[in-house]
Amino acid sequence: MLAGLLCCEMVAHRGASLGKQLANLFAKVGSFYPLRENFRLTPEVKEKFTEKLRHDPTEFHGTKVAGVVGFDGLKLLLADGSWVCYRLSGTEPVVRV
Image 1 (cartoon, rainbow, N blue to C red):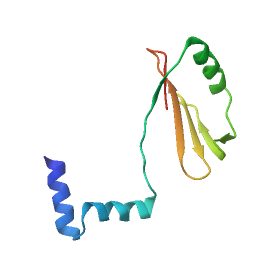
Image 2: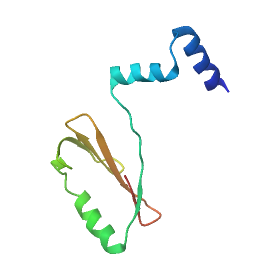
Image 3: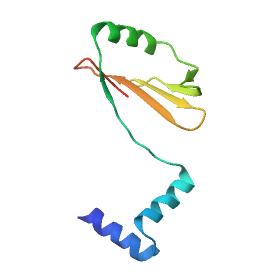
């Protein structure tokens, strides 16, 4: 309820729709497209994937990897400012991307 009231206050105070305010925010800080996928793995694929995660890649889908964070999975920081993170589930044969 409070979040809805705050949105109403933002529209009233700023005189711009939520869509316009969001577009302005994205123009300042860049777009945000959250997406999470879970992929089921066979034991063989999980073993191969685990081995691949042990080596830091230099490229991801044609984009240079600018940095790697290996805490709780593998997060690739890409040269264009985007990132992707892989995390193996500890309880099921799934990798979360």
